[in-house]
Each structure stands twice: as structure tokens, then as C-alpha cells.
Length: 281
Ligand SMILES: Nc1nc2c(ncn2[C@@H]2O[C@H](COP(=O)(O)OP(=O)(O)O)[C@@H](O)[C@H]2O)c(=O)[nH]1
Ligand SMILES: [Mg+2]
Image (cartoon, rainbow, N blue to C red; front, side):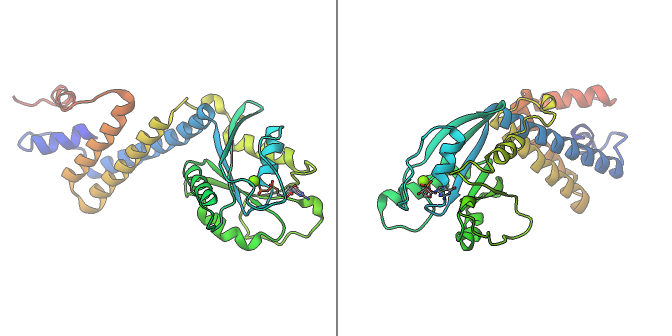
């Protein structure tokens, strides 16, 4: 696409068989589609390599630390009935049937005047920013806090609502529909196998993972920029009919792609143009 657009811009006097617009639009649609597939694959690959970053949030005393301990299989975090027991973020790597998962236990997110707790809440939010999954832990009665907790989860993370303390036999208030929910008891272990299965699924293990590429965060990041530039290029072309602006977006897309594939310079492009078209020098 760059070849044709740039050739048309640089050599307007040549009789170049410039691709008709519908063809370019079709090509750019195909390109956007394949980059999107690649991104899905790369994200899965990244989760397989780096592990799923799971951050537990919820009101104090919801049972986050109890759940962390139950999943870790050891008393990693201190558990007491005193709200505000966890003040720092605790990190534990676990392996679930080949899926590597990083669990992050956090201080309950709440307004506090205690400077230590405030710092804990700040750290919890920092961990959330890079979460693949926000695990919202709700004890019976915590339901009104759900909306605020959902707001804390970044748009890039999946959300799973874990309704804890089901052993108390209290009726759970229905939540918003469409939320991924699991009922457990961190105390008795009920529902934990279900939760482990969900975590495995989310980490990408078992879903045809052999096909995914072993991407790193920087690859995913570069591909996201490629996708954004391609979308811009298509918009410039489709809505503004501005070939020059589309060319610039395509250049930026290729530059981002070069971070993975190696540099593709202006000379490379010019070389490709001269070898594709018969241009008098
Ligand atoms: N009955 C019952 N109590 C629980 C359960 N999970 C945690 N707890 C209790 O709830 C209190 C707070 O637990 P903790 O894990 O420290 O909550 P956190 O503040 O969210 O980390 C403790 O007294 C726990 O023993 C559960 O599944 N059932
Ligand atoms: Mg805790």
C-alpha cells in the first residue's frame, strides 16, 4: 500500500497504474483484520509467557487475603477479622496446570486518613493499572460497593466477581447481569476448583495455545500502535480522500512494526518503488 500511494505522490508525472481507491480500501481492511488477529494471538502469547496478572480488590474483610492464601496453598497473607489488616500489596506466583499466574493481594480500597493505609491503596491502584484480570471479591452485604470497584478496574482488564463467604448460607443479592460471577467460600474451599478453572481459561492455557506466538509486552505494544495507525490511515483515505495523510499514517504504522521486524527505511521504500514501476530517473 505504501508503495502505491507514495509512488503516486512522488511521481505524479509518471503514468503509474495507481491502484483504484476501492482496491486500496479493501487492502487496508484486510490489513487491519490481520493485525487484529495477530494482536489477539500476541496478547495470548504474552499471557502465556509472562503469566496472568491477577489483582484482588474488594472492601476490607471481603476475604481477599483468605482467597489469596487458599489459591497459594499456604498462609501467605495475614488474615484477621480486623478490617485493614492488609496494608501492603502482597505478590505470589502460582502455577495452575501449566498456567503461570501472579496473584496480587491488596489493601481494601477505601478512603482512609491513616497514611500507611493510604499508601497501600495507592499501591493497589498501581497494580490494578497493569492487571490482566481484576478479581473483585464481595462478601455478603458488599454489593453496594460493586459499582465503585468496577470503576477501579482498568478498561484493559477482564473482570471476575467472586462472591465469597457462601458458607454463611446468606442469600446473595443479585448483581448486574452480564457480569462474570463465581460463588466460593475461601474458608471451606467450596467453588475454588471452579475459580481455578476460570483462571486457567483466562490465562489462555488449553485454548489452542500451541498456535499463539510467544510475544512480549513490547511486541503487543508495537502492534497496538500499528493497529491504531492503520485505522487512522483508512479514515484519512476513506473520509478525507487525503492520500498524503494516509501515507504518513502508513509510514508510522510501518515504523511501529519495524520495532519488531527491523528497520524499513525510506531507501528501502524507494528501492521497492523503482523495482516495481518503470520510472525514468
Ligand atoms: N465465614 C467465612 N469467613 C471468611 C471467609 N473468607 C474470609 N473470612 C473471614 O473474613 C475475615 C476477613 O478476611 P480477610 O481474608 O482478612 O479479608 P480481606 O480484608 O479482604 O483480606 C476473616 O475473619 C476471615 O476469616 C469465608 O469464606 N467464610
Ligand atoms: Mg487482606
